[in-house]
Image (cartoon, rainbow, N blue to C red; front, side, top):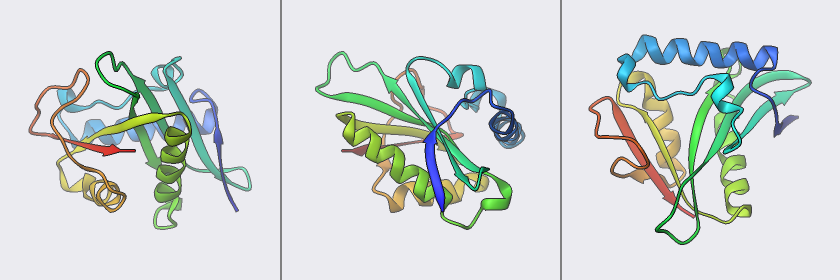
Length: 157
């Protein structure tokens, strides 16, 4: 049974998964287009971080970052650091994690969820996952700027 629970990015196995994530991002995208957060940034007060585990084995992770929303009704959030461990791919871990994050966002009275992902073929499975779950393309949000290597998506809750 896969369990999703809050976790700590500096935890040894999580740190390793996030290090792989960052390495893949820098290998796939130009440095100025990499927006993945390192473990210390994912431990910040505006971020809730979860892992998916089965019998203690780390299968994946994901986070929800609270965004400033001074001119909007309701909270805004950004999905960060969605990653499935190589050995767990194809098992639906990403869908479970995304659904968990969205349930938590709805329970936390978020009105809008955003994300940024890449345009390269490497990111096609992620873009398909988000589109299947109701995310649609949108302009850059928060502090992002237009970038030919980024796709911005949103979901109204």
